[in-house]
Length: 226
Image (tube, rainbow, N blue to C red; front, side, top):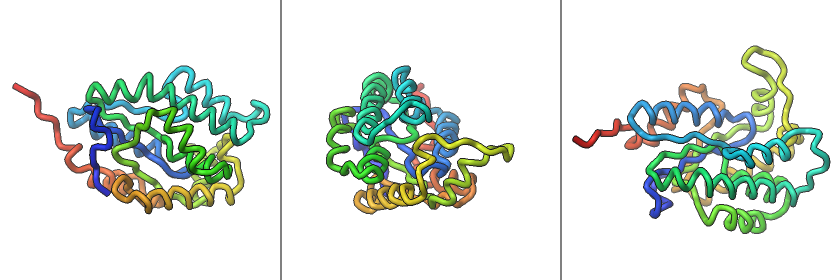
């Protein structure tokens, strides 16, 4: 893994957290944002689907139960539509302004969940997302690898020990989530320079230290120009 500038036309860096449901992506993204801000970086934390008003509405439609039948192709297009708005309205402007963008999920999630999990095919899903994003790619993808069983046990128990309901995708059977996990690991093996793969069974503190170590230079305090 090396943090290379995938987006030479932008001034900021684009870092994405990926992995199965329950891997701890949101927690680690927030901790990384906190560390970057403490060192003087301008940071935007965002998520997919979401990040814009229309994206959050599409998030509800695609993830909440009780929205009627959502077939695989419609699901893939809804994610792509939310992503198009996210990139155009939020991510690219932030990157162009020199902001570090830390995002919970991006295109690889669609390739894994809809391309592989829903069996639509990676090429078909990649094609609609190339159009949606204008070819934008992360400078680094942090993959938190979690087994389906561990992921389910994490996401169904709240911080207070109470039971937490799963959304429409989370509630899919373990076999579906196994395909997702295998897909992410395949992507990482195929593009090792873009991926940092970490075992999500580690403690929150251990994962945060591993991410900080990998990002090294980005966590050096920004020196103000006199």
